[in-house]
Image (tube, rainbow, N blue to C red; front, top):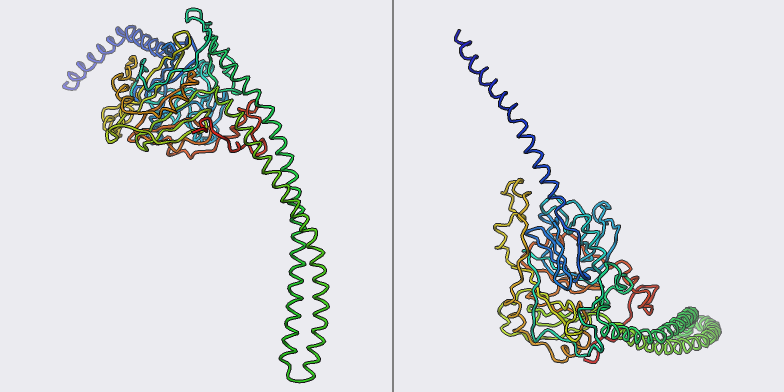
Length: 558
């Protein structure tokens, strides 16, 4: 009786609950559909890239997991990203695109597909299409949405600056006396209002054959100047080709003479050894004669001496017979070596002239380091200059800023500069960061995506204050001002050059105090066959070794 009185209310409650579920089922289904629609909309939220000019820089925000690619007019296309996970963090710092490959596969992680790869370091950090789980999940690379990566791939080019910042920052326009302006007039420049329309991938500089050359088609005066420089460089190429061919020919002769000398030297060495042995026998026989105590021993020593002298005479004849051709071979080798040295000097001079002429078509990159108190210059991913620089109040941090000449103005006779910062450098600022958690945050919170927001403009006052403290050498500034192409940049930082700065790179600057697992876990590799990019223009490199000969730098007169 008692059990029946208990079971009846329970049954009634269960029935009521079931009826409630039936009643609310349509509403729940509708909510589920709405959630699904929102999720699908979120997946399609990234806009199709629609820049009005070539991409001039990309800014990646580690904290907000966003990337913004900017053109010279300040227009930006943005997308979600997934950067390096814990222990493989994408290092905050300054990079540039070193290599591009539409169908790339990782040589570190089981041939993992990396579509539309744009390399930032030779240790393997890159931008590429990949999965976006909503939080840092890569092994150091920056993953992009597939359609976005494909579109951006066609609008960027080798040499484009990529800034990985902690926060979502945007470049700001800046003007300062330290930022060089072109001193060479543009000639008859076309007004800005009549600039040509931009078609992604249509510019001739988009190919790897000339990755650093600026796109100045919208400025006829500057285009004419660039074409004149290209023509001047082309005029230097035949002399460099002829000098290189002459050097190769003379070098072959020198190698043949060296091989011939090696043979004669080997024969001479054998003859010399035999002569030495024979002379020692003569000396021993003479000592035996002098030391003999009996007539019998003396006669035996005399007989041995006669034989030793005869053998020594024959050995000396053989030695002289071997020495004559060796002397001739040595003389021929010395002459060939002299001709080779002369040809090499001529080749080096011709190559230097051609290379310097070619360098004038490349933007200049200048790096000022507070840590080393030095100024560095690179062009075409090659070092050009390394000199001391004056920085006031060197005990105070400068911050890290990238100043970029994005385009011409004033009918092509001036340039517009922008500044962008990498943000704070202290790990203390990571305390509230959802992406660099310490293991105590829940996986659900870690996977949550921040609400999208527009990038915060770089602090213009701080960027200006950093420039106020620097004094560039007048000759450096004057020389750089002769050819201020779009893409010319000045980097100011508290840091020194990263170990990633090396052969075939622009400046790579990593911010100390920021996680750098993505770099530490990846050993730096040499650029694979890097000079294949320049086979059309840098014909004067040694194609057998793919190494560049010594050259006179662009700023060699310093």
